[in-house]
Amino acid sequence: MILDQQLLLSDKQAITASTVSTNTIDLTQARDPGPGDSLELVIRVNTALTGGTSLQFAYVTSANADLSSPNVIVQTPAIPAANLTAGSEWLRVQVPALSLDAQRQRYLGVQYTVAGTFAGGTVTAGLVADREAIVNYPSGLNVGGF
Image (cartoon, one colour):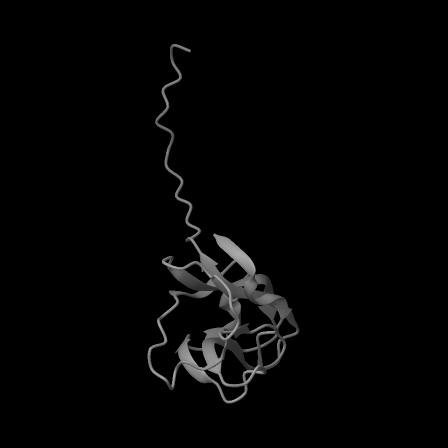
């Protein structure tokens, strides 16, 4: 997985109440996020979220840098707190093309909608190039004769 600092939306961001990502991506800024490459949105729990009831993740676009009045591009259902364990990934999707004017606003980010109050836990979210996928196969190496 290739993660660029400029495409990082939340970097081990503490989630205790409903909020938005600490960073946004300004689509009017000249940058090269990997033309011709597929980008994915990845949201990963770094440390388990505890104490709350559930959390919903949403990939949003907004005309405002603070992501107020956002349009939701894609979102998860409410995820029970017991499932928000360290290392779990949520909303890993290929970034959709924003072709409609209503969808294509200046800023991109993530919205976190909390039910209850979380006592702790952190989340990292960003746009990444290249899928992190490890498949462990049994060894087929024959070492007899060495």
